[in-house]
Image (tube, rainbow, N blue to C red; front, side, top):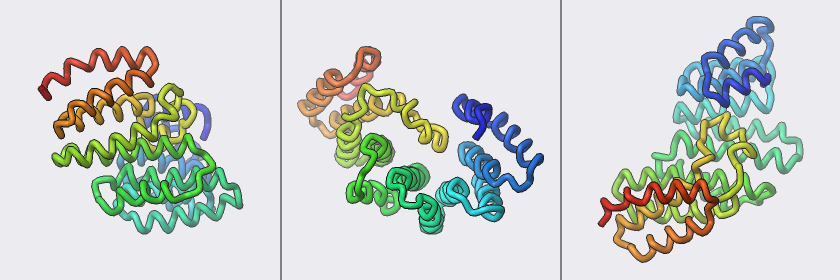
Length: 254
């Protein structure tokens, strides 16, 4: 991915990213990497048919790590999870014994399933269960993915009125996030931002706020107060200021 395309991704200017990649493809129709990267653009635009088309073109031109990743993500977006997992398994063959590369691919696989299928109980919970059982050469990245998945599952539970289940998910997200509460994970793990558009800057904040809300909805006022004290103790000053501004919103739970 060129610097110009990468910058367009980060800024959210996907039409520019698509235009630049299309120019690359027109200049070299065998450019499998540009097809894969354009598939990622289509993924961010939720244009799943075009995402799968470009990913398939990429692997047809040349089987590659990036091609299979793009195809796996596109299949997840089309809710074809089991087909996606088979494709991700093909991507693992390119890790060539590199445990960190293989683990990063696993996290992308887990993130894809959670991002686009979290509303399906069996498929959405599967990555969380597998994360806990898998050897972990990159604890920080693993904790980021687990926290994000837990927030997704917790939000779905809250929307369904399952407040105790939501509180459990948000509590797990906060626990996973303890290792990165004051770190700039947005910059450290930009791949999750590029591929999925995850808002890592506010992940810790959202997990804590939602845990407090879920606990209050279950009537666990003492536990909610302890959760609030915990998030204030562990947060940096800018995040503490956000929490202080947010406190009036809790009046509705009284």
